Length: 230
Ligand SMILES: Nc1ncnc2c1ncn2[C@@H]1O[C@H](COP(=O)(O)OP(=O)(O)OP(=O)(O)O)[C@@H](O)[C@H]1O
Ligand SMILES: [Mg+2]
Image (tube, rainbow, N blue to C red; front, side, top):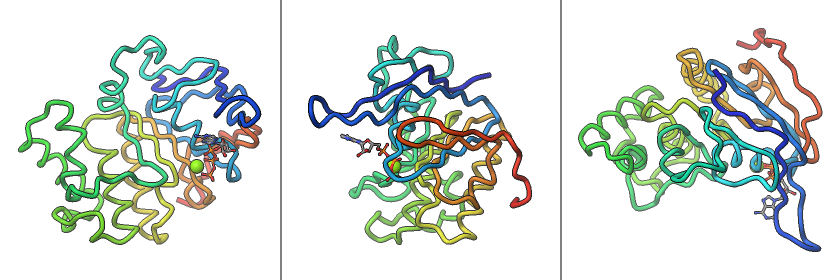
């Protein structure tokens, strides 16, 4: 089952003389159980691709389907995103006035889950990635790597089946990065689809498929299972 499908997607940022064609006709499908890594130089369109795949941005042309639904026809995109898409942002986007646990609870509470249950879910996922002890700290009381793990917990909480991670392992030491990859891989094996932007071949090696972007186009794609690094 395809959880996200981009068909001939183009995205131009800005207009007129300053217009930047960030993506130029990209087609990509990620199915349940699949971990796809996106690699490419800075400015090649990786974050743009992820934003489109998660319905955070709309394509200039082409179509995006999440869970079979054409995003162009979805009325409440925010609700669809909260229920279906877990997102780890490149700049994390944790809310400074909320504790780590409250940050992780937030998408569930916005979706109508009662606080007590949302807190239990948050603690379960914080425990899964070994940061339950940070639950009551605020983002500015956390190290970069700890913040990153909290952001990952927020993406994993609930039943969301499409996980999009932009450099999710960026600020992590390799051991922690490997642990996070293990968690993502396990989610995949349980039926999630993961699209992961990374600069590190070490992490791309966990993927079923690696897609290479350059100047807004997919230039290469490997389906080779790079199991050697696992
Ligand atoms: N909101 C925006 N307005 C104007 N241009 C943008 C905007 N967002 C991205 N761009 C441009 O689009 C191109 C692709 O940007 P994008 O952020 O997708 O690259 P990236 O591959 O994620 O890079 P990095 O590895 O540095 O994160 C770049 O040329 C960038 O400057
Ligand atoms: Mg980026």
